[in-house]
Length: 503
Image (cartoon, rainbow, N blue to C red; front, side):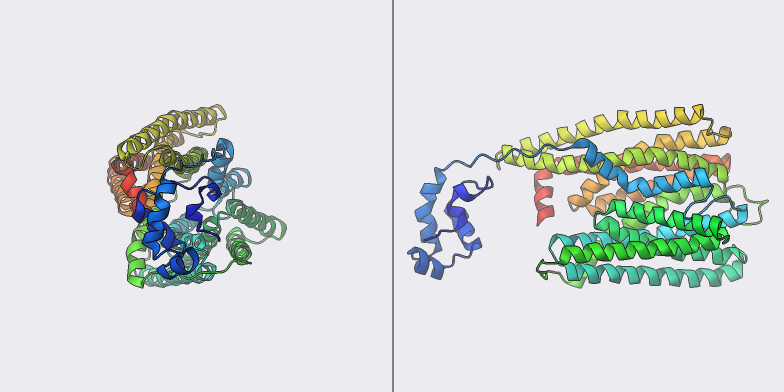
């Protein structure tokens, strides 16, 4: 007669542990479907409790089977996997430096570049929250094998974001007609890039959700290739060529995402688990707010630089090409440093499992102290390495005469100083989200935005527009400090937060 698996330690494959008491064993039996009727009919006991009392002395004396040693973590593949998140950005930077145009932007008249830049930044801010919520909800459905719900949820957020973008375009168009911020044809150009790029961010967001980073790079590369073909081979004007290529890349990304999701659903029985709508909203709104504020933080210094000292300009915004060149140099450091976020996050979960396996359940203090030491070690390893990357890029840029003037040199130096703090803050935020402390992550990015705006505004108005970058660096430091403080507080009670996040 076969017995439940909880009564057979030899079949546990290293995950069995002795029951704590009779109640614990009874709970395990019930979890495997042993009801009082089953206990009487199949196992000859009066009920589940009697069965647990009979088996408990035998199982209590059985030691836990030796757990298999975890597979060694391969550092470079994990790092490269994390860095691949920024590969499309790297492709765009390379295309801009080599071809002088990319999927969007390029060598354009100042006013046209201003319109394209404004539309691009707006697309990031408008879609950032939707992509965050779509990805968080989609990952939950994928993890619980609810592929049909994942499909429906994803397209719901795509439609919601697209309609929001259209409403914003209509509202901006009406307001712009009255105030004349961007006269024709600049207003339609800005809004065209806003809508088209918004669709592209949604499409690539689905691929990121499906852990298909390389497919995002493929769509970006094909989009840039389409711009090159349309503009150089067929003589299409640059702006129409870019808009067509963006929509082309978006369609490719949507099709690839649909194919991946369909492939995962084949042969898997879809289960249906969900909560009430009001509970979903209470869980998702911090992610939406964080996604919106994060992209607002990233581009606040640009907006401050573009609006500083524009009294003699024809527009309220003035595109600053030298400022953008310096930002590209800083982004290279960000791409190289961002790979550490994925690696360090994977190490965190591995260390949690190792400590859980080696520490008694009642010794929570040792578990928390070990993980605090892990956190301190990761921070101690990251900052010297990140500083080395930033200094190396700055030195190489000077040797290659990338800086055409003192202004670019100044902005690049400030940006390179700020990106290590931004990356460290992103790691802390990924841990806070993983431990269900989204409100702490939201507080960190909100504080960073305030610091960015206040510092950048005062610096760019009292000095030159290039000083707006100091707001970014100051905000990045605040972001790292606030997120880090919340992480340390969380790690001091990690046993509780890790358990609560799993419920």
